[in-house]
Length: 423
Image (tube, rainbow, N blue to C red; front, top):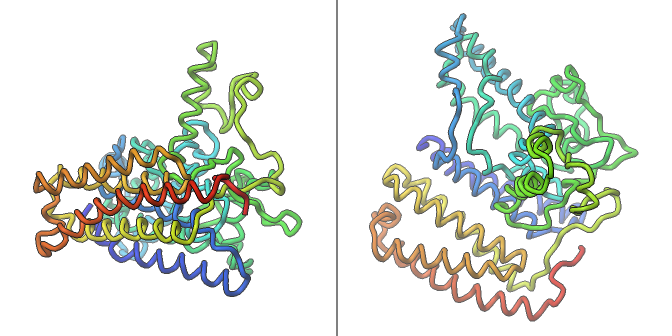
């Protein structure tokens, strides 16, 4: 937990700079629109994902260490080859987990957040799940365990393998010649994120593209079919927590509505998107039929409103960095209460981005909770131990955030009667 938090202290600002640099390049070179809400939604999803991981809010059934202890037959002695083996094994595992996540109804919920952006850029790479509470796929790493790759090696290589998937989420890099035959490139991954019929459920590889070629899921990007991004059942929200559980909510609803027990059971294990017979007519769900002609989700804000959202977003980044830098000093209660406050903060300002009145409830709860912890407990004492002024900064934030949220919500609601518009 502490090691990962230290990595994030460096990685978080670097990713933010890269995301904004790509946006600036796109605007200056091609006059591409900077879709503020989409970008902040993607980055905020990254906040929730890394916070969940740092807090350890998941359980692994038969983790890699168990397999290592029980099935190891060989031992690779070369430091170089053990790390190469670990990297390839993680990529093999990643391919199959990725493929299954696309193919099975209940597993799609763990991955849909990553595909939910209707843009394809470095920011959408950070749309990662918080809906996985039980990890069951460690058995895909059995080849590494058989070869005696130690758990400590997997722990070191796994973040590197994950970060190496960031760069190819861009439309600004074309095809890369011979590299197209070996590694996943931006062209390959544009196909993967597209909702064109030619491209759906293709190119599941994470670093190496040959898995797709060997197992029959490869599709080249076609000049005749420009990729269109998103999911066929659009999310129509900027709130990453809602996106994380929207598919699951539909599955629960459909399972409850199903008249026979067979449908109630099999809906979870059927191919992604399957619903009981007649449900599309009886309980219709908005679906994109023509990827070339649909309205992207958007909400409109004044310049002042956008500034307010950016301030909320950046202060949340500040809170996370401060948290990661002092994580070793927190008690278990302090960790969980601080994490809850950050989750509520993200929920509140992204709900404001949707112009939902309900955001005021979460804004009030977040501020009341933060003030209560600061003024009546010492759970967050590590936050201001070295710099007592930070207690005042946090108190000031909670008070001002509550007041300004009401002011800006009322101002934006008056200024724009139509809350959702097409850009």
